[in-house]
Image (tube, rainbow, N blue to C red; front, side, top):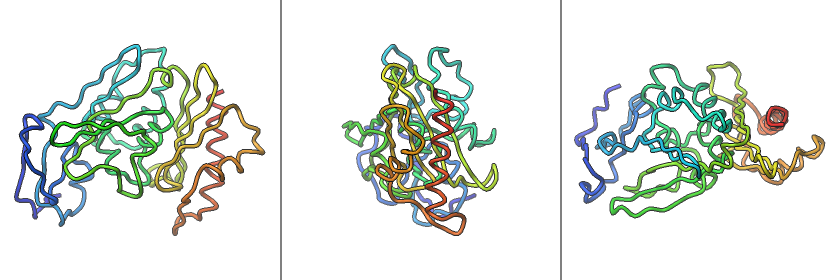
Length: 268
C-alpha cells in the first residue's frame, strides 16, 4: 500500500547522522505491517537497513540478535544442536509468517509493533531475554523482555529511540522450549499464545503469555506443578485478560491453563 502522506525518507549510514527526531517519523525495518494499511499520522520514514543491525552472534554466554534480523534468516540458520531452547522462537515465527512475510519481517519489528497477538514477545519472555535500546546520542539501556511492552502497541521506547538488539542467555537455550497457540483457525489471529522454557539445571519453568491478555506477561513455576494448583498460580501471576467478540476473558484464562499444561508435558 502506498503511504501518500510521507514527505521524508532517510537512509542514515550511521545513527549519528540523525541529529533530531520528528514526532511524525517512524523507523522502517521490514515494513510488512507498516505498508499493509494507511498511516495518515506518518510524515517520514527512517530506514534502518544501512545500519546493518542484522548480526547473529553465538558465544558461550548466549545469543545476540540484531533487531533487523529477518524471520527467514533465523528460520534457515543452522542452530547448535545443544541449544534446544531456540525451538520455541522458530516455531513462533513459522506459525505467523508466509514465505513473503518471513523474507522481510524482522524480529525487532515484531517486538516494537507490540500487537497483543505478537509471537516473538512471549517466546523471548520465556527465554529470559534482555533488549538493548539505543537513542540518537548512542546511549544504551537494557530492558528485561517482560517489561518492554506496556500495552497494545505501546512500549517503553521513547521518541527517537530504537530497539538495537536482543540477548538470550545460553542457560535458557540449553534447556527445552516450546510454542503453543490457539485460534479459531490456523490462520486466524490467536486467542491464546503460550511459550514455555525449562532451565536445564534448576528445572524451573518460565512461560510467556500473549493474545489472551495485555501486555504479554511472565508466569514462573519453580518446579513441575500439581495440575490442580495451576489455576491459582495463574490467577496470582497473570492479569489483564482480554474479552472481545471472539472469546471471553474466562475462556482465554482457561485455555491458557490448557496450553501451559501442554507445554509442561513437552518440556518434561
